View 1 (cartoon, rainbow, N blue to C red):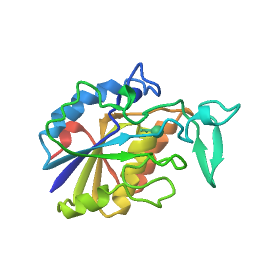
View 2: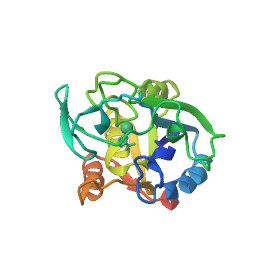
View 3: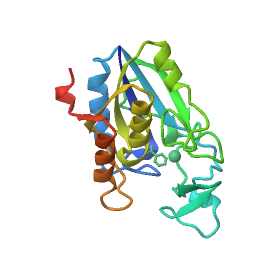
View 4: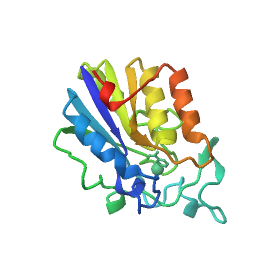
Length: 204
Ligand code: VGL
Ligand code: ZN
């Protein structure tokens, strides 16, 4: 049983959004094509309260892109984004949701960020996705979405560490590259961890 995981295909990560990923909307068509080829399709949503501590607006004198210590973890500060229930947090209008069986929301705890679709950044709480996949008999997952160097990378690393065969679709991802080279380093890190980087057309 194979599962496709669509990572954060939300308006705020698309061009014009609050935390726009360059060319981010290009991956929606890839998602729509691949949906039909998997036994199970799930999606994640970044889903923050309006006063989430990953927002630079919550730290006096700080700007997006800076790093602060948040309860002992390095936290990159972001513009306000993906606020629960907002238009920015909604899926891109062109995303075909008909084959989407469930949605997992993350980053809901004000004090803790969650890049991975499986666990919060402190790895204290599960989103329930890992348990869900196991209950469905899934052995292999394939990921695509936004952003390569944050949510896709951390989700894929958690997937492989949980024992799933893990593939990431290269042309189904776009990255932020806050520091030049972040996206390339993310691909290398994923490969070193045993994640297969595949193209849409090579998927069996
Ligand atoms: C993400 C930064 C902040 C992502 C989410 O989806 O990659 N990046 N929140
Ligand atoms: Zn976020």
